[in-house]
Length: 442
Image (cartoon, rainbow, N blue to C red; front, side, top):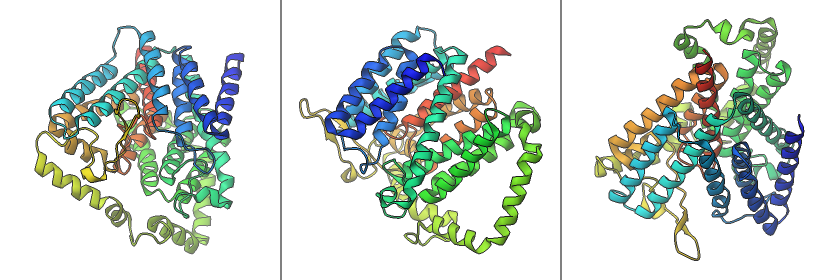
C-alpha cells in the first residue's frame, strides 16, 4: 500500500465515522466526499463507491439523512470525471448518451409524470456516462488497483457484518432476513452475491491469495442464505454457471486456461468433502433451504418458481396490464406501475423532485412498460455491448458483469444510480474498461 492509498484509507475511515456519528456529522461526510471527488478521476470514483456505502448503512447504526444529500456527491463527482475525460468516446459511453437522449425526449413527450421521468433520465445518463468514461480513462494499472480497493471494501463490509448475525441489529428490517450493517436484506444479499462471484472467480483464475478468495466465497454463500434474498442466490449460481459455461465457448479458449484452479486437487478435495458433509447433514440442509425459499415461513413457496411468483407475480401482472394499455410508448421512465404507489420527495426551496422510489422487480419487463419497444432495443443494445466487452476481460469481469445484470430479474437496479444500483454501475465501469484494455493489448 503506497502513501496515496494510505491517505485514501484514512479519508474513507474518517467519513464513515462522521456518517455514523450524528446527523450534522453525516451531512459533513457527504460534503467531504463531494470535495474529495474534485481532486481527480480516481478520487471521484472512490467518492462514488463511498457514497454507495454511506447511503446503504443501516438506520440502526447511522442516522437517517435526506435523500437529496446524495446529489451533493453525485453531481460534482460526475462533473469532475467528465471534465477530465476528453472528447474521445468509446462505444459503450456513446451508447449511454444515445440511451440518455432517448429517455429525456421520451420523458418530455410521453411520460405520465414528466418531471419524475426527466429527473431519473438525467441522473442515470450523467452518472453512468461519467462512471464508464472515468474507468476507461484510468491507466490499466490504476484501474486494477481501484477495483482491488472496492473488492477489499466489500470484504470488510461482509466481515464487519457477520458478527451481527447474533444480534437483533442484524435483522432490523424484518426480523428474519440478515442485513448486516446495511439497511435491507435485499441489499446485503446481492452485495454478498457480487463479492462471492468475484472472490470465487478470482480463486479459479489464480488471482490474489487462493485461501482468502475461497474463504470469502464460502462466507458469501452463508451470508446469502442468511439474508433470505432468493434473487441474490439465483443470480450467484447463474453468474458462476454462465461464467464457467459460456465464456470458454465465446472466447474459444479451454476452461482450464481461463480458470486454472478448476482442475486442481486443492479445489476438488474441499468440494468432495463438502458434498460428503452435505449427505451427512442432509436433513439440516433441506430445512435451511426451506427456510431460505419461504423466507422463514413468510412465504408458502415450495420451489424457486413459486417463490418468484409469490414475490414478483403481482408486480409482473401490473406491468403487463400497463404494457397492453399504453403500448407502444409506455407510461414514462421511472414511473410507478400504480401512480398511487409513487411517493415523490421534493426539495423545500424549488419544489423539484429529488427522490421517487418505485418497486418493479424485473427491470427487463419494466423497460417495456415504461418506454416501449424503442427503449427495449436501446437497453438491450447497451447490455450486449457491456457483456461483449467484459467477455474480452476474462472470467472474473465477465462473471461479475453477468451476475450483476441477473440481479435485475428480481431487483430493478440497472437504472438506480442513487440507490443500490450505484455499486453495479461502478462494477460495469471496471469490467468494461478491463475488456477494452485487454482488447487493445492483443
